[in-house]
Image (cartoon, rainbow over all chains, first blue to last red; front, side, top):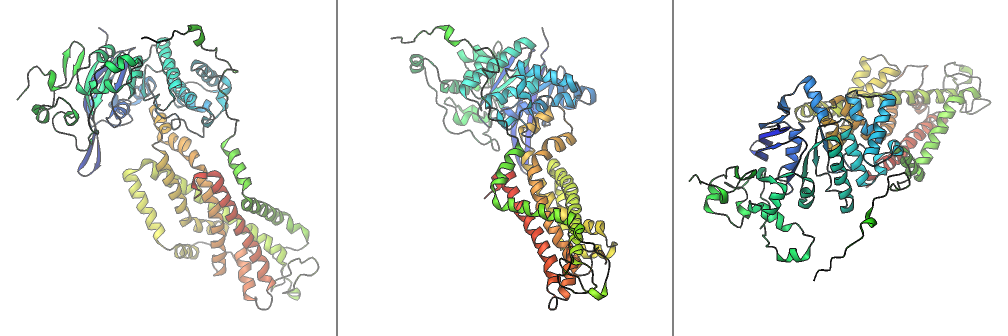
Length: 323
Length: 307
């Protein structure tokens, strides 16, 4: 059996807002990502999925748990290993208008990593950038231009080229398409899939758009208020969601076929997402759950494998409820 | 009833990627080119720029228009209004005012530029570090800054001037002793705003050092506000220099600055008003032009700041 490339174990990221206010953005989540696969991470805004991504790539320190990349703890890397990690894992950002420095030419933006790690300079640096531009579907003449001259989709391609310049093994895509037009979303996602095939990349794909996640991901994790609610193969998850939250999310995702759409059962999720500053006791979803029971308010559901390779944290599927 | 229409797949073949098929880009216009276009549209700023250019030109070639110099005294010709090649007349010691005004203008501008340069260096580094690292570093640095700023700067400058030898560099140093504070504030505020931008995160994920992020990513993006702050700090430095000279803490004779000339002229104002008029006019033009240029640059470089 192959070793997972990334292991997230009980990851916690709490932000101390002031003396007695703690924002538990990520509160104990675990998952593994296999080499070459695409792992989708979905959830509402504010559920901690971006924080998870940023903690994995060591933009934030953890407040608990650990992240292992190729068996090594990401947050304790030093010197050479740290440098290697900074090359091996890259990130694609959400806002293509904020993720490129407006004062730098496309050439300098893409070559940033090459400069930092002193991989290439002069002519070879230019060559690498030209090649990357072609790879992402832009052309040489764009290298001398500045970000504000490009459209959103083109900028996102530049962001992808910048990540690819480091020849990474693992890319975290933090809502890479949510700021783009629908027509351009497909282009970018297809580009990402093509690159994955050609270069054997592994993706952690963070999004809130379920249909896109289904399209690109092999496995999907659903997050709710800093916790993982459900994790399964993407087909399995869409066919047979176990957690009421996943069921709710799926029933709000539009289906292209109107006949199917009419027939399907709709589960409404009531109300707003509670504040992560003061999450509900027990199961965090219980305030909005149509099946909430007494036990839900008292006991945290256990993260367990309800079916083979299908994990869920819900009292409905708990074999033995610890009373 | 199933009304799904079958489309011919060949209609959806992607075009080959080529220069011709790529999206049309906006005409290439750099940040500075854009700024220049906006600057030109501002009449006042343009007048300021023209005035200051003319003034600098005269300050440098003007002294060659007559055969006098700024230090030679000629008691028999004192306090003469315009005659012969004494275009602005002479002062109480018979020194040629035309020479002295332009020499003084050069000295005043030199002091102002040195002071502005020191402001930028200290202000950008201090404000940049304070804003970028934030947290405790920021808190301590801001308190230091507040302490410096809470002492009235005239007091600080006068004390420094009594301690330092009067000269161009000491005056500039004394002026920037407190002059860098507004610059540091501007830079810190901008850095605070910019440091959470995703391009900074991107640089961090690639392993960029703090130094690189601060000086290659953040400071270039604060260039606009820095330039604006400079154009406002130049007239204020000229003004403070004039003030120091006026109360007798400036340069020593026979050296001249606009402040000294105004002071000399002021003493004989009721008898020979022209001796105050010429240096005061040049001083006013310099101050006015820099303020006009500063206003224009603010609108040109930072369009969002405009009301």
